[in-house]
Length: 366
Image 1 (cartoon, rainbow, N blue to C red):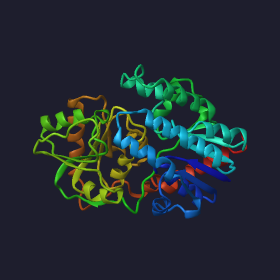
Image 2 (cartoon, helix red, strand yellow):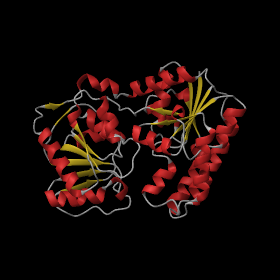
Image 3 (cartoon, one colour):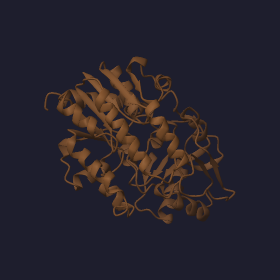
Image 4 (cartoon, one colour):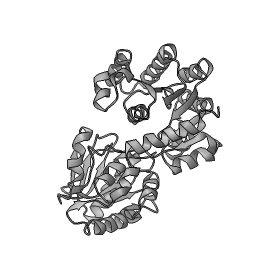
């Protein structure tokens, strides 16, 4: 099949493009990621269509005027129309949510393509309601995203809790493809514990990820914390038991995972946090909230005790779960590996195969 995939950044869509190409499809990946960068992640050069030159002025303006949110809207409109004008004919069109609309219409009407929306979080209304932002969110964006849900034939999501949010808003179950993301096993693999920290959290340091709870829990229980990622909307504390490193290249993360006993993510909202899959591959017990997709990963494990899901988002519950996970960690000797043969379920290859099976099953149904 001819498959067009439209993204902006790399996200997981580049991994999807690579894996569908390996499944034998003719893939074209549209993004503003430079072609050389795409090929570093295993995608063939001929499969890359980079429009960096179009996006660059908007990206620069966003840095200069970060408070002017309409720049992002204009950028999305421009690249959407660009794709709708210049994308090649295809059988399948996969597009990143909240960005592409006109190109979805073009793929459906002109090419009679199956259209799939890649959506990383809960249904937009559910997501905004969780943070009391429904009344302040730009109505243009909300209207556009709800229209995308209706336009496409399928919506690809990563976890069951996201699926439940779509069902709650009357999106038919038959329209949802649930497929957990994968991990690159050349970069993430079983580690030997370098016992510097009790817990590690990787990703943007922000309240939405429960970092306020994490700070107070570390203070109450005297856990040592390692954080790797950008500081988004919270300051990092100056406590001596907490250490911060700015975001690093993905290939460097394993050396940080090796320094902690347990991976923790008490997020208030997430689709499927891929850092959890990385931590799992590196052998760290995981403590997570119900909003991270950790439960879906646990369901794929033979030994399910290694992923501990919080019952509620409180300091006490987080402390109890971390204490339990640290006790589990203390049973690990030498190279940490509780996944064993289950790791084959968590690869990008497995993700691509599940996606390919879905496409083969539904291609002739439209």
